[in-house]
Length: 258
Image 1 (cartoon, helix red, strand yellow):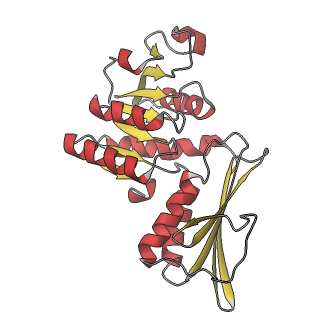
Image 2 (cartoon, helix red, strand yellow):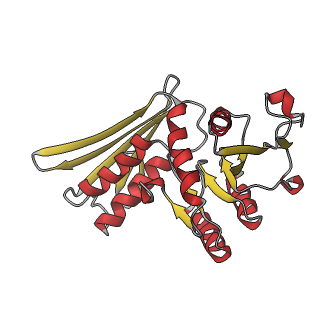
């Protein structure tokens, strides 16, 4: 039985994670954390009486194997560091970590031989999109990324879009060339990652979509994925939990185990 703590358990993704854990006969929910909750009674949230509810990291003392995190960008670094230092294998779905923070967490986890994963997206379609984009990056010199999320997403660009750009850049090993004569006083050409333009859209009615557009003389290639229900992410979370329990290093990206 794999014992699990869910951080951000009362949020939209956290609730999906709690349901996934409770529905899996090989998983056991032993802890739930969110600093904004006041009531620490598990019954208040429809949880089993055996589940410990926490609103302070320093109070967490439950025996657990896995820390699943769907909190907020400003808290995810401290949460993940806490999990690693206490021997909880982190499965991190919260975006907003900088490259320096990821490197620091990986160094810490690897030194302590604590397995875990930081994933920009747990959707299988999104991960496959990133893998396909890596293949295409060998054959196209110009790329733009358009990502669309719900209006409540706090960070831009999305972790998925930024990771897609990183993976493309890793393949190409050079910055994409920009037009030196281009004029854009309103900043409409989007963000820039080594010459790869990233456009972030935040509108109601969406959950998470992304397009990776490759262009070359006389042709283009568009790779697109859409998420219509957050439930789809749980397949990837379940896959990650079952994988990191066997690992002793921190994995960056679900694409590394698919």
